[in-house]
Length: 463
Ligand code: G6P
Image (cartoon, rainbow, N blue to C red):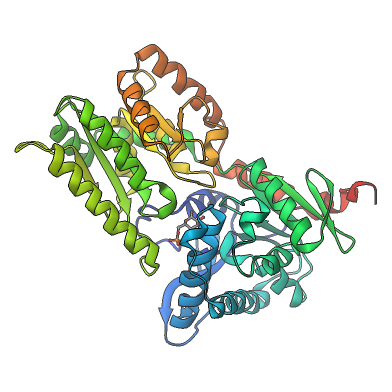
């Protein structure tokens, strides 16, 4: 069997608990632990000299990491990846802050990834590149002679071409990523949007739903929704609800119903909109009948939009508590720090209402975790944004438009008042959608489509 080489910007070299790790790391770790292979990417360190690669073996996984210089980190990670691509891909172009030199640095760092990786490669490796930080990497690897099967997976959404075109530089990056053999997406919408952009920006021809052709070469497209280890998460939640953090939270709540949100502190997550919905809810319910806990793990604090968001939600949360609080009671607890996944699992099991209301999200694994964490005999209700990829699978949740504060407030109330029979019915449908899947199965499905035989067997649709 050929070796798998995963390349991602962030590499979760094991060192304690990952806290609110992003969806990518959560999805990939199980697969890599099971399969073994090489995982290449940024060490997370910013150093004076460009360093690496440093290689360490941990169990079945070899981790090879490079350090970034301050200029690389500022241009590639903070500037272009998170200041331009991230907001554009999530349909928030007004948050883009473009500087030409950041795009140059992005491309240069993608080339550096290729230069450092190529000497570590073996003849029959299969390469799997992840996410929007590395759109240029397939082209950079090909330019250095790498001919083996190369897959690319986009963990985040891809918008319609006219929205994608708002990010300066995106046309060239779409050309670069088309040097991969297989490109995977979370949803059919993302796949179809990308296919349209590949035609419009790069002159690719669409020869089938799942197939493009460019310069005589087939490029396969696929939809692979990211999954969680649902059974394992369910067991963790059942144990953790008895652990100290959950017991302390339960004691502080008494018989108040818990409304819970767990997110990275990110402009795509719809946090101000969610707080506004909670504000409207609390105004209509008796004091001390419910409380909201919002965990908002600080993220990408070098990006201005993230720092502004922190201020905005601090203000909104303060206003909710000062308007509706009582001398002996506050309705909202906002924590701008990460909690361990175990602790979060226990909290999720206690929560009557799980709020996952991003403005746009590739998948959102928190939504799946909330479902997995519930007690099947007495499950809570998921209030889920229609604009999260997870909504395609979890359609039995209360689906909301995060831009409609009133609609969200109604959904929270409906969730709080929902009879047990309906809660069970909705939960069972959601559980059925995730119970049989796993991150390993997700990864295997992608990798199966990336075997050379499979790729060669593709008939290039009649050509
Ligand atoms: C999302 C992205 C990942 C990213 C994660 C955490 O899940 O798809 O690529 O790693 O967020 O963000 P960070 O910037 O801390 O890596």
